[in-house]
Length: 248
Length: 324
Ligand SMILES: Cc1cc2nc3c(=O)[nH]c(=O)nc-3n(C[C@H](O)[C@H](O)[C@H](O)COP(=O)(O)OP(=O)(O)OC[C@H]3O[C@@H](n4cnc5c(N)ncnc54)[C@H](O)[C@@H]3O)c2cc1C
Ligand SMILES: Nc1ncnc2c1ncn2[C@@H]1O[C@H](COP(=O)(O)O)[C@@H](O)[C@H]1O
Image (cartoon, rainbow over all chains, first blue to last red; front, side, top):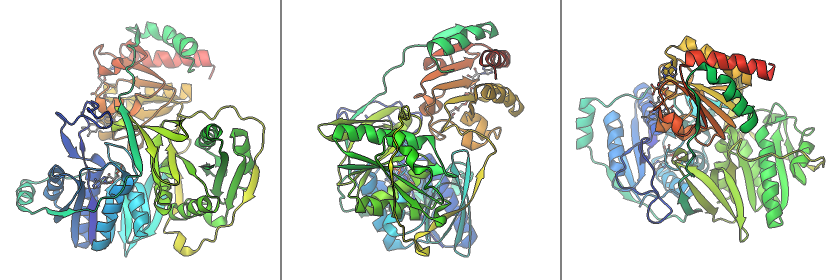
């Protein structure tokens, strides 16, 4: 089975966001980056499929030199091959999807695995865009995946429950937490990953379809009211919710 | 100019977001002097379509086809793109729900269009729609403009007001869909709904519990409080990872992003990743025994106290007040 996994390199979840000097992006100073959490589930699922069906798991990331760190992590977990699509880190979903789709076309994978959403711009678009560009079925927010003889049965989360979705390979599957438990890279994996060559490719520029005009922080919240220090504060809390906030 | 709002339904009942999306489309259409239409897709939906008039739709397109009783990302995308083209729509609005998020990008790809995802506000400036959307899980917001001929927006549920329904009915126009097997690349075969369980992503009130509850069975306290308010139960990642609660209840940066009118955090410390998912709630109540817990920094009301004592008292008081 030819498995393709998309991974994004994003500020870690502890990041305190500061708006940069351009007023449109974040200030990168002092930020640590990581493999986007949902993408880690995608990598794990790719490795499980390769173990079951044999074949090759290729991991690809579009961005700058720094994305190599995330690609190495995926290699250390066990991916066979890593490719960096060099691009000065675009956040435009359509443009990123176009480049990823073009690369995927060339590889013609049986399955494309990716995260349900990057935790930087929270777009959640790449999987569906790429699938449409390649004419493949797609399943998003997947918490369970079974593949037999090219038939895909997946469980995806919806409001208040799950949908059981059927499709045929080749298909695009977007991972949600719960799909699996990502493995830790083994020491050997880490050593091997250091030696592997990350293939680099230039990508043709694609025009953005979304223009970011400004970025700002949410308005600071006024400090709240401590209503009390034990259960005797409860009636006052209920009164406030009822009369002041009017939410109950 | 023409806007089409996709009105989501399940089991031939509109979701609340359907009304929110139609109303938002109407509001923007009025500012642009545009037409506001809606679109309903499903297996037996003709009878409900006219309801959307009360939320501002002038015309409602209906695609009613037994094959569409269950959702299919590929078939839905095809239908919406075809109607958008046939009607020369300038803008399409969708809910940023599990369904809207799943297929709206496919429509964007078909129409060579940009999609502003998960918008929390829309305004018109010099004839251009400017969308506000949270990034970094709500730690920042960007304002964006869509630069393509057709413009797509998904709107975060629970943020846009549906307004009060206002009597008028819409013209219902049936549209045919020539769907073949090839259009059903991915298809829902079965839906499992957890019996009567409210989802945090849709709930107007959420009561979430954290590790301070000490054991999974103590969540009954949270469940009872939630029941007294008709609220959904949420959870921090710590308790989801511990297996106390299912992950579909997790609120936060790697869980669900919620914007209820009331969020009650019980024995949750308020780590940045948790705050990221719930800080846009209208009112936040924190119950935590540590006065320095970061959750208090964003709470509107707090009780510094033992959850085991405060929560049952609160439930009893609410039952009394709300007569449930
Ligand atoms: C990549 C990544 C992603 C993450 N994503 C998320 C996410 O999406 N959502 C999320 O929630 N977390 C997320 N986290 C985890 C987050 O950092 C915290 O670990 C987690 O939110 C803590 O959960 P908690 O508040 O329940 O537990 P704790 O931090 O252990 O807090 C327990 C609280 O309970 C209080 N308490 C104890 N006993 C009582 C009592 N009797 N009465 C009242 N209060 C009491 C304590 O004072 C304390 O404040 C993520 C972390 C990482 C690294
Ligand atoms: N620059 C990128 N390079 C590779 N994969 C990406 C990139 N951006 C997003 N993805 C993948 O697409 C998924 C959804 O991202 P997004 O639509 O940006 O929220 C992510 O979880 C990644 O798997």
